[in-house]
Image (tube, rainbow, N blue to C red; front, side):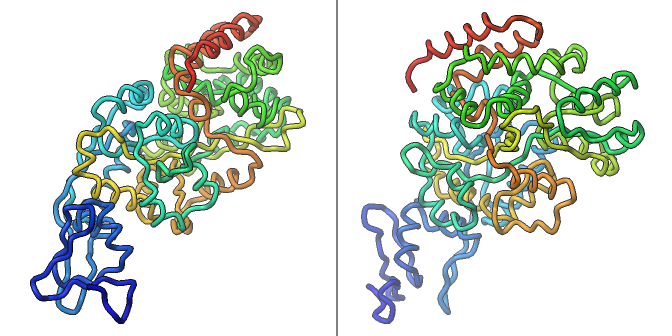
Length: 470
């Protein structure tokens, strides 16, 4: 039933006839003018309504017929449990629902740490259709285990809106695409401008000046470095940056992936360097959450804090706009090695994925893919960013004119870095990144930073060696 004027299109006439897409149960209503690519997409989305939803809520039209999507449902599993990012996600979900004919989105929010530590069993059980996650090794790990659904069809439609770097971050080992990248954030040392001004403190650029600043803040009755590790993962950020600066990107990535040994003297040097600043940490840090440490910075009880840009969430939540206006950061100082020139840093990328074992994905796939496509838009990412300014949009068409100085500076520090890592628990195996492995090993180190770490490093390597093949 092709249109002789354009062989790339398929016209369903007004004669009561319908066209059935081969290999499916889908019948197209009469009066539609569709490209062959549209027909293939409809088959991929599972229904005409889902296809229309993915296109933004309005259907292909002729002079006498129009189709709009209504209804449909999907579910979303989220680790965005803190108030600020949780609101940001809800804002996006509300906008998606409005734009897609009232699609019902059931959001299941789980505490961030619990979600991360139980992700393996979650994805093997009865997960939601879509779930929030991370790019890098942790994405590829679950893709390789068959727990994530490839989304090449969605990606083909949205890939022009992303840089090559973001595109590479969402590909599995099999070259299929498994995620849509929606935001990223750099790790740096955050501080309040008014606190630095009051103390006449200067931003340090090297290790000696950094330690001297810590000593001065201590004399001024400030906790020099806010630190918290009740959650287990924050300490990984310090290990990452010290290992990157002392031993370089290649060694760090190799260590995360098992090509380098934990017993290497280079790792011992990281722990020795780290011990030089642990005396300046928050008291009783092992029992503090990252939010509690952020409150120390917010309320001018601590001078600095090494964390991701998401620390701004706590400043937004204070309700005082001036708090956020006072927040600033500087790159981790040079440590005096040849690898300082790499200006390497952690800049994790957050993504949305499809859970292959979701019991409802079969019926919800159209709307779930429509949601992923919606999340690829700069306007959608800006909606989230407005509520949660610690998440910088990834889409090329996101409007940066709205960014305040802090966001622009964060984007600049990432673009200036010659080497970028995702964060330890995203660059290494999930079964080496949890409470019983890396998190536990770092807490054991931090309980006595002056220890000879030889025994601890041996335990770390033995644990790695005992892991089953991926």
